[in-house]
Length: 194
Image (tube, rainbow, N blue to C red; front, top):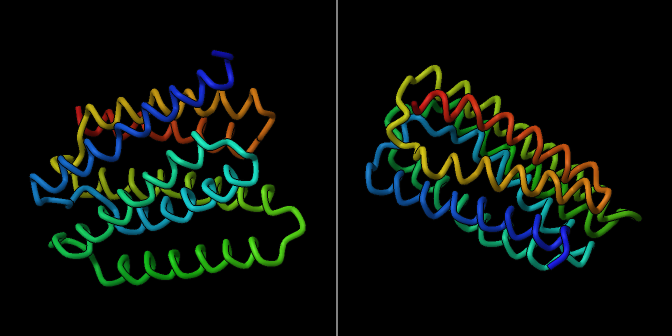
């Protein structure tokens, strides 16, 4: 197995484990107070951008992983929408706007852009990076990490590091930067849980 495939698999396994574990934690506690609807709306757009990028690059592990992740992200969004007693109307509205504008922009890129891979990557990068400030602010404001799983976040950190290296190896700045900065953004979440 070459290094590119290895880093894709590390990313796929690490991030692939994050969402089922995180969803299980959030659904069993039925307490998504520490989870941000706005943050998960942004990451939904980012994951969708990376699906489009992966399809254009011909990297089935990368786009397959992100396709599964998008399902889990929408499950979490549904749980947060339905069960969070502390979800302000403003955050609900902003998250909905982010979803509509971001996904509409991605559709437009796929229909109209000359370099779909490049623009899909930048949409992916923007959505992934926008997740962390919103999620970390929500976590530290609520001081309630019960809906978050330490195991899931550590798995996510490892997967993000793998995909950051993958991005470097395939010379894609959006994948390298998005996943590298996301790995750094995961550290305060892990700290908040501990």
